[in-house]
Length: 253
Image (cartoon, rainbow, N blue to C red):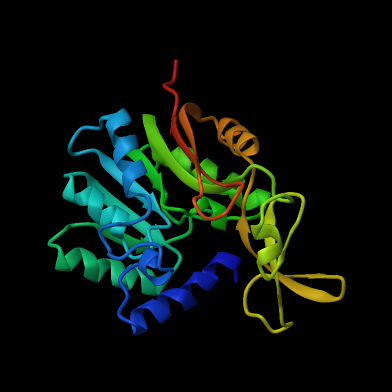
């Protein structure tokens, strides 16, 4: 199974504890409505100025705080995640708020949808830094490009850093980074998710934390035009950044 499918276990714990979102579970926010991306998303929507009935897709939607926020603004919203439990909670959260959001279990790296050119906006709900291998990231961004309408926008907020070797996180975590910014954790041989054997040990990758220049280049190689970039420094970990970008799918000639 893919490494990021391990999020299912976290969402099961959240459900058991009656916690409604990832941010609340990780103690990054105090409520479902005050999700971490809210301030930036409001800024991004202010720059894009979409029509009120714009079609929006959130990839890696989790339990749906971003999708609910968008639906409350009048957008037509779809959201998907690899976690069945997250989608189950998301549907409950939307129903409790009287919102009509179409949720499904899917993977942006191998999306089952055959539709294309249908979304005005696609939101990365902190999904891309959970996609670690180059081949999967290429597949994900190709699918994002294909699902966007011409002139449509891809709004990104993902983990980044200025220098992984200098970052205190490098020595504080229980794991190791490689030269590509992939974070590896040592696991047992019978660990159920995708792993590799190295130095006679087994390792599981959980994050891809690239530098801003590489992230910008990756988006350009996917065929997207970058209209806005913001680097937001983490208040607690030196050298760690949020890489925020607004990209647009070009119009055909």
